[in-house]
Image (tube, rainbow, N blue to C red; front, side, top):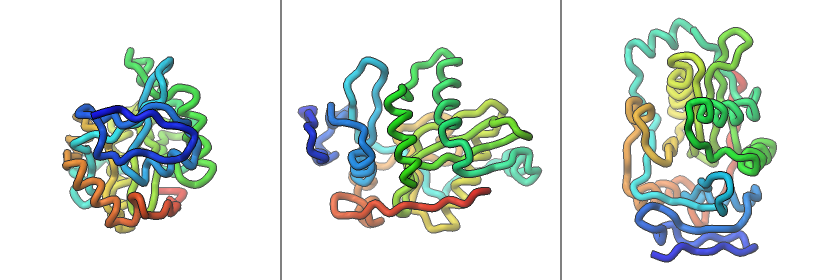
Length: 231
């Protein structure tokens, strides 16, 4: 399949036209309008320093259905002990920076380059991007961030500086999403951390159908979501 080159107009090709690896398009900008449209269509940006802007829609798609989250007895005990204090949207920029910093400290590459951080900060200021934080005293020890539209939470990245902090954040966020009737949390691509908690691959076609039935997709709306201050 061809890779499409985006121009100034805020449009995307059909995500079903992505390559076998999931690459759909190159170019365009990271404006809030384009990003919100991308998430509505099941597309996300992912690229590194010195690369052009790349847009992806992988097949299969890794997702976590809130009602299917697996919380081990050990993790549940940590949650009940309230070892970590959980907040939402208190230090969004700090969570995004920590997600990047931890990867760099581990010798891994990060896609959270300066322009990506600025774009998500703008989405946060507009009420579309959210963070969940885990605190140990006054120290930020874990967290995640993503984009919430309608009944979908599109997870972008997470980090931990204390064992189990990010698992507690994810488990409690999913429990909240379940109570609020969310359809799924998009994980984009799998990793052992996510699959151990119930994430699984579904065909891209099914993912896009869920978006459309949930009010997003090509004809949908970009409804903002409010998260509580404390989880």
